[in-house]
Image 1: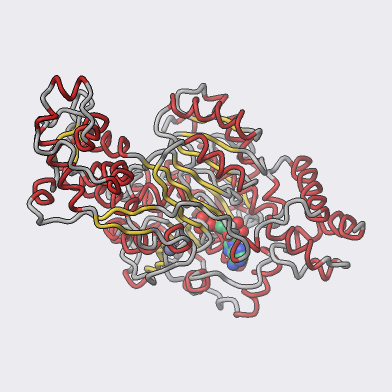
Image 2: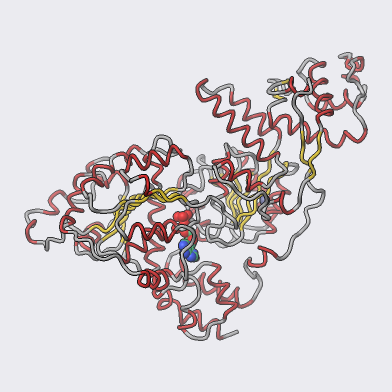
Length: 623
Ligand code: ADP
Ligand code: ZN
């Protein structure tokens, strides 16, 4: 970091050392941890929640007892509450280390909306002196800092002069080289933490990987018994994975069924631009592109619009999403395969953080796998094995007739139930067909024609269609000519897709297909081939989980949304910072008449009741 960036003048402390009240961290005398009743009251009054979710209470309990902890919780599980609640209850300030300024500001906004005294020290905040003063005077519950600042000696001096309740290290996988997002600055945190041995540490991450976890514990000096891992299931996300036949039409259907905000991931910039344009005209919704090739102002403005929006669609490369915690994303669609199951889980995890129903739809094609397998040839030998495994795992996920959630969770080392009831395969069981014989026919045709023709030509040979090209090459003389049975024809496309996904067919440079992977085993009858035939018609489903979706079109709900929009605009925050959809929904059903009644609704804390209560009651009274 450049010294000029340093937010504090070195003279800041000047000679006035002895003049301050010695609220030094070294005097910290551990007080009695708050009682269960106090904790419950703060949960309700500050956050408006009636109960903890999942492992939140375990994490909060450890932290309140001053014990260092690593909490591994999936996106949307409510990690921020686990340090914000202790920050409110404990004497002193909770120092939060967070890797992205955008993320910090999001958190800051939400914390302040709940009346939590929070500030950030970053290059983008110009109220440094006021922040430092408030911090030293003990008037801050939360202080957010970037890791490179946190590791500076000046910062350590500043901390020594205030009372620190807790160190929260967000996105803690950044400390590990095993993680997917290593940040060298995170390695410098340890000396700071060690300088305050009596202050508990709370590391937070959504990364499931075992190596990364162990490494975080070691790097941040957290005891092994401090590890708390939440289940990785995201029950409100409905997974659907379909072969791609017409991406625009298929994604348009997803958009039409989901009126809320959504993200469409596409593999390249060109594809992003193209899809965004087509979807905008096909759906009539606001659809904007996001990729690294756009000028940064355009990117920033498209992102800001998305965060504030209640119905926008963002078509993006995977560059988009990290550091956005918009809770009301209702769908994530993949126009092609993601990089790995881990990436898929992370990208789809951006849907439904608010716990409301959300959908994740992936479209895949044989060419996605062909391209990915081709890329394997460019990979250094030592990574080849693991990259191939990644791709194979993905092929299993898209090809399976089993519960998608079960496949995903098993991948992360969990033992889920066989059926989840909320994925395409559970809702509309697909047919599994044994096509080993047909696969042998196709692979033989590939072999006999010299491993250089594409599916179009192969299909003709198998079906016994002797056009000019077939005759010129003498392929009408081969033993495989015309061996396809009539009822096998409709399965050929799905078969070729499946064989390409598993690598038994690989693309040649000139657009042909060659044998690969376990093709020889299939030909010898030592490996079988199953394909999944998706149900013909995708029926519209009613009831069930969809029963709790937003009552779009209900006049009271719409009026509450309108008021939320106005209040959000006036405060310069996204609507979800005012209230979540679930809170408006509960208001529309319960129709509270008094502030006291309104205060019992989920998401309505004391601060928000004061700020917005009367306005919302007035709208409810009109109906
Ligand atoms: P994470 O950082 O783990 O992805 P967040 O801290 O952003 O998750 O929380 C996700 C959402 O869940 C937030 O919108 C938050 O308001 C909500 N939430 C957190 N804890 C609770 C709870 N105990 N009850 C109800 N909602 C909660
Ligand atoms: Zn399922």
